[in-house]
Image (cartoon, rainbow over all chains, first blue to last red; front, side, top):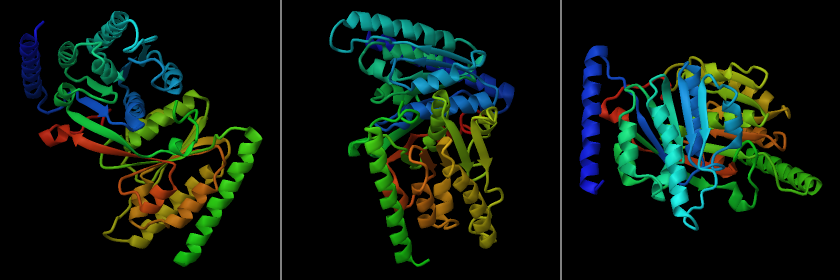
Length: 203
Length: 203
C-alpha cells in the first residue's frame, strides 16, 4: 500500500471509530471509551507502569491481554506472576530470537508479524478490557511492523477496550494517535554508580 | 531536634548503612542491595509503576508491603487486586480524612505519624523484600512528616529490602537519598480533550 492510500485508510478507520463513539455516547449518555496510552522515554517505568494497570484492571474484574514484543525486555517476574491467572490474563511472550539489524531482517519481520497476529486477536476480543502491547514501539522503530496497519487495527478495537503501548522511541504517528502520552525519564540511576541489576526491581 | 543535629544523625545512619553494605559485599562477593527508588513528576505512571514492581516482586516470590499515605489517591483497583494475596502483600491504606492545609493541621500530622508507624514496621521486617510508600512525597511536602526521621528509618532498613517512594513534589533530600529517580511526565492527556476518568485506567 502506498503512503497516501495508507493515510486515507487510517483516516477512514479513525472517522469510523469517531462515528461509533458518537453513536455509543448517545446510547450511553456518557463519554466513556477505551483509551490508547503510550509510555515512552528512557526511564524504567514504562513497562512496570503498564503492568500496574494490569493489576488495577484485574482488581476491577476487567480481563487483560498482554503481548510482549521483545522477549526478555520485560520482567520475568511480571510474566510468572500474571500467568497465575490464566482465566483473567491472556499472556503472550513473542519476538524470541530477533536478530535486530544484524542478520536476517526478513526473519525478524516474520516474527514481528506473528506477534502482531496475536495482538490482533486480543484487539478483536470485546471480552478483553485492557491490552498491553509491551515494547511495540521498538518493533515499529525497527520497521518490523507497518505503523499504519498497526494503528488501523488499534483504532478498530472494541469501543471500551483500553490499549497501552510501551517502548522508547515511539514514532510520531503513534504519539499522534494516542489519547495519553507519558514520558518516563531517568533522572538518577543507581547502575551508574556500579550497582548491578536487582531481581524483583529491574527484571 | 534541630536541623544540624538531624543532619548529623542522617549522615551517621547513612554511614552505618554504607559500612554494613561494604561488610555484606565482602561476605556476598557481589554488590547487591536494596534500592531506594523515587517516582516523581506530574504524569500518571508514578503509582502504577510501583504496583507493576509489586507484581514483579511477587513473581519472584518476594513479599511486599504497601502503605498508601493518601487514601483515594491510588487506585481502588490495585488495592482490591493485591488484597487477594494477604500472605504475600501487607497492604495498608492510611491517611483517611486528611484536612490538608485547611483545617486541623495537628490532626493531619497525627494521622501521618500513624501511617509512618505502619511503614516503620514494614521497614523493620527482613521478610519483606519490597516496600511501596505510595504518595509519601505528598505527606512530606505538606510537612506532616519530618524528612530526616523518614530518611533515617528508610536507611536503617534491612540490607536487601527495596523501597519505592511515589508522589509529585519530591523534596530535594529525598532525591538526594534515592538510588534511582524516575520522572513521569505527562506529554499529552485525553482528559484535556474532555474524556472522563476511566475505571481500570485512572483509578
